[in-house]
Image (cartoon, rainbow, N blue to C red; front, side):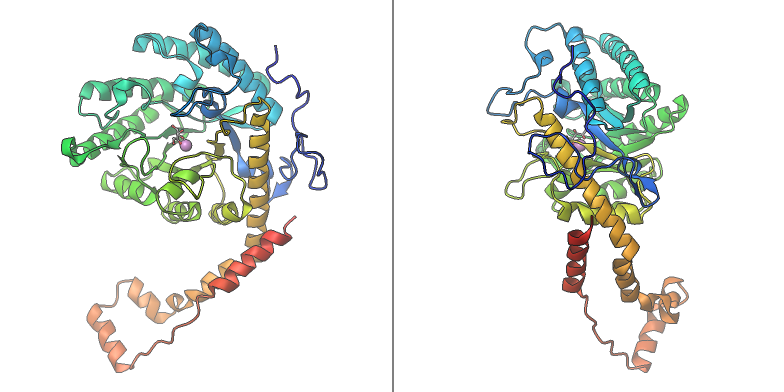
Length: 445
Ligand code: XUL
Ligand code: CO
């Protein structure tokens, strides 16, 4: 039985001219085969649907019960029956939406058993079932991950828990899920440390917890190699929520951590838009930092709400906000194994099952328009030219001498005094550049 019977055909591109009525399910910009920057749009964006918010969340919040129509989440349904119904609906959705990828946590797809052995058996059964569906539909796995934050055993962290038994339990879960991801041909494996942080320093040894976290990552990287998984390992930064302070605060913090523990080259970052803004940065900043420092991996696409300070995970809808980040991604050569995962949830009042289509279609059209704008900015070259001009001095003789270490502080000082240096400040031209970006946004079709 279909869960979305009103959608008979996969959602297709209807074009910008199709203003239609708001209820019509069609892409206005996302045209999967349209070439952009030498690749079809679908290969540039590599969009994915997440299993958890779309199929494993009932629409509850801390003040109220679920509002959504997700029969498999009802109380009293046999857990494996429920998992099968959920998986059928999820794959029906992926194919009807027409996206190439999905992502999931172990417990999104298979119920946790009463022992680790039982949990693994449940996961294996559901993963084999998913493999068959992936074969027939062609939908691929962008990434898998283990949920190391919901169960009470992880209240004080997983890898950073004061109890090594919890560490070992988390190791078992990650081993099983890494192998499941490998079995499904996943392109990446994600670690988001929601509870890897602290609530109070009164009971916390920060230095010890950092060593434990690094050891955990080493073990994961070793196991990845031993099973021959050639996907990318990704860490997803977030500054806080649920913990008061999370160790993987932002891209720069993760970068410093990886460098300190000699893990650079093993782990890359999965940057989430709403996590970036919670950390006090823009998404643009986080992407640019990761690319400039060689740790960029993938993106969780969503948006926060500028008026509040928590992770609202709304569908992206602002081309203005996304275009510059997509510009940096394209300038850096685009995604390799990564993609745009919609780590997005509907608003609690969006309780019609077809609202899931509207959310994803709008998000994907927004990404597609941002991609077109980014490609136009890259082709036009003005932004890169402005940066080149601004740093031109560093390509000259003095700049080279400073950077190649052939000069000392005293040499430079003597030179500055002898030549009576009096550099003239030049304009940063911010408004002119901002106007240029707007002009490209307004004119790109
Ligand atoms: C939580 C979050 C997670 C990760 C995967 O804020 O973003 O859903 O993406 O565990
Ligand atoms: Co996320």
